[in-house]
Length: 328
Length: 198
Image (cartoon, rainbow over all chains, first blue to last red):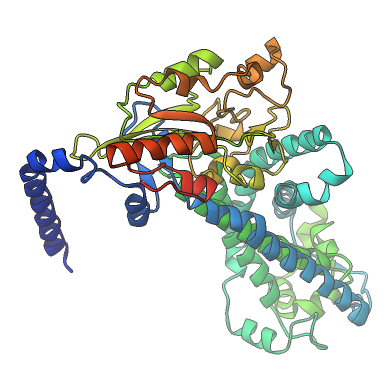
């Protein structure tokens, strides 16, 4: 139906409603004054909520009934808990099994003793600022979803409230550096993270951690690009939905806030699960990987095995970069 | 013990807002918070109805279910109350509440909404004594004094009924039988999973 015909239909309905309203009162009132009155069931069937006019400055108070809160309750109490528990505990279990079978991926040719700069000070600062915020945000967020089931039974309600209250403040205020960090990550690493042909090959060969050999990769391999986009897109989703929750009712109704919480909860749970994998590979999963974000200097042999094409690029840039190193 | 409920007979409500005023005055509810409000549906059109709405003290209350710090409890009278000492002001009870009952002293920027406030069915807070501290947090405990909620007591047309759910349902049914019509007990299906034939 075009907009035009739709408007015409609506006008027609109004005209009929007006005619009915105009003609009937004299007879209807003596029979049943309730005949035309608004009915709860009908309103709920039509809009699934009941809103009217109220004289309060807080216009959200004009909605007197929204049974849809029941669905949100079901999501928050049941669905979200299952999604979060399965994804987070599932990934943890997978990582334990993986570590026990595969162990730490060693630098096959041993350490060369020579290093190459992988991430400079600025990049590491952004990474750790975002990472620190993320960990605190994740823990305080998990506390909101699982705290009363896991923590409340082992402490007094007052102590649990104190923890949750502080958690809430940290969660709200650390969202700002986290968002800034996510934007900076997006900008500073976008260059190396556009998917290309090398990634297809990399994924086919199971990458450097699942597969047995070392498919060539530029500065960021297929897995790291995945992490990059999870951080950028997931970070954007949790930030936007989070700010809707922090500044409620600016352009959203209660339904919008419920939707924002659903997005926030699901994305955050999957985000945490993905980051557990990221933390694993960056620490106990692979020898020589942590240094990239630790000191910023990685062993040349590590780079050769995991980021061959990147190392060639770096070497190709000539000695200028290598010479510049000691000055830093 | 009685199971306390509210019932608003929308066919009697004249939107005088006496219930709102009575509530605000009795409990000295701060600016910006309305434990009870009157909303007019289809205002100015034939068949408009006004409904006075507050916390309905639901059976299996959604606010209590979603609260991350379990600050809600239901009294022996079926009144849903919460502890402001435990509340962290997260706002979740407002998302889940079918009646928009939870209110926050501040708009909510930076998540500092303050402690949630809502209708107590004039039953005070977790601590039943009418102390000054309790009054400042929750208002008076009229139930402890053997009185019913002031909003319903003050209703000029006796549209708003508060008290034992069975008794107010009986009163409403008698009214409907006598006058021959009734638009039903607004919110009862959502709050108590039951209806009164209108």
